[in-house]
Image (cartoon, rainbow, N blue to C red; front, top):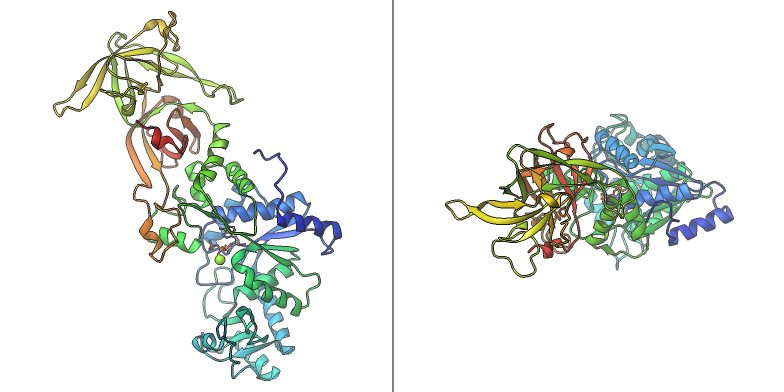
Length: 557
Ligand code: ATP
Ligand code: MG
């Protein structure tokens, strides 16, 4: 699906159409993408970004990038920068950039207002007492002994909390709602807690920090958001969201809608878990090409268009559903197929000597970059010489019937070059095949025999004289089971030990040497690859983005 096709409808779009038609909020559609800067964005976030930015674009609305940075312990400016880079890379630009930490003053004022109205109180129980007092889903909670403090006492304590008079945990500010509420979140939720901690943006200006539920909805309301789109795990938070924006006095406050988060087979989409993979050294970093992060996918060779098309294909629904890996890989292949040049690389080289080809001759053969069904033009010269490499797997000494590649006495076509026939097999002392002696037919330049004889197979190759040594990194599924979070065992126990296979001695045609880092190719018959940042000028490194098709493993003879 191209970007020009109309966006797919979904239940959120339908609500937004109605908002716009009835002018429900008295202001243009305004959405936001609200990451906490405690990790890199992953493809699940991309789904949310495409939704929020897509709606703003399609309904002439606004979209803010807001960092929900209310936890001084985990947040960092490096994540802010990475998140901004990733959103832009994905192809989106925000209208306004905000930080929940810029609203600490406003949130504090709201807190005082709630106290003054008798809607919030300072609780001096400890964490455990508060948890116990909350009750269970079947039993109502018990009111805190501090619940009926006077407004004056509460205000005094709150001001002293802010002034830094108390140690961490001495008091908290709680909303005063209903200790028997069927939604446990509404049983006097915590609003502010004491944390004598340095915040990456606010420094030491604050020693009380808002809880997520307190900051999130009110930040939306302060920014004039109309639809606050979030994932299903926040469903139970909607009651407190509505209570807070109402009690704080916002007119036409934002309305929260929940949708199903993206889950993809063979990976995890949780920043906390991805952070563990990074910190515990299971991957090389946030941009390891096996990671489902946008930085990882970028380095893997996936394009922003592929991710946007994928988001469009999976759509937005209320019900959770896992996406199978082939759905994602299909979007990646579909996009690369139409845009990247085809070149030749041999991953596991087997040397061929063309015994009837002149010793020192090198000829340059024309090779188009694109197949006929890709509407792009271009070609390069590929050097051909007496010694070439083919894939080891493209030769069998004792082939089964359906093996249409090279074998003793058999003739195959070398792509863009000549027909060759295998005359003899050279082995070392250990009995391993080290070389094939073949002859070529000079009359078949370009690949066709003037006498009309046919060959069954066409294989790719690289000139030994002119080919370039390359490192090829074959990436595969990060986990060996579809749902690494399914059972009680730690998710790291199901990491796929073969998720990265490094091929050191690959050979690639010289045309790719001059290409910049990030250049993408189809290596003919092998897969899609991207030139990695670890490349040296004379020794490129390529990452496999995706195989040519998912049945590739089965096709290998
Ligand atoms: P994680 O669980 O990965 O840490 P998060 O929700 O805690 O994700 P945030 O930075 O708070 O991370 O998320 C920013 C936004 O992205 C939120 O609105 C959240 O709902 C959305 N989001 C996060 N993960 C997914 C996902 N897998 N699919 C769709 N949206 C997601
Ligand atoms: Mg979260």
